[in-house]
Image (cartoon, rainbow, N blue to C red; front, side, top):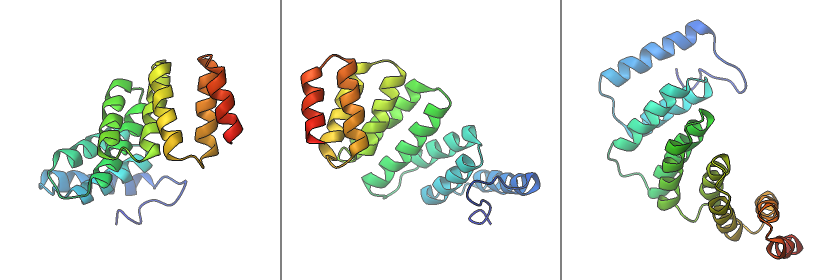
Length: 168
């Protein structure tokens, strides 16, 4: 039912959404604790704009011991951080993004997300550090290289920005 609930770019009918919410609450209260199912329900809540419910479910998923690989748990932290950031809960988002980085430090997307949070907090040096690490991990990403060069210019690190732009 939940898999077919949403089509790309459309919200479900209010009655369908109410039915899903009732099923979701029943499954939570019944103690269904599978991290995979909990995360899928969180993703559905996120797509339907139910951000507080998505946050609750992502956290529940992360609190449940499981044997998922570190990269998979990092992705859950990443989605939690992105959702928290969209609600302007930057400190909580930073914590979740940092967890994603610590679990999967070779993924530039986690570093870029943490840099976005540092940028929101106007912590330019930490944002530059994360963007630089991400750009080093993914030298083919033009967007990441240009974002890093832009921040280097903003921080008046002109030589570093020029060197980066010559590589691109």
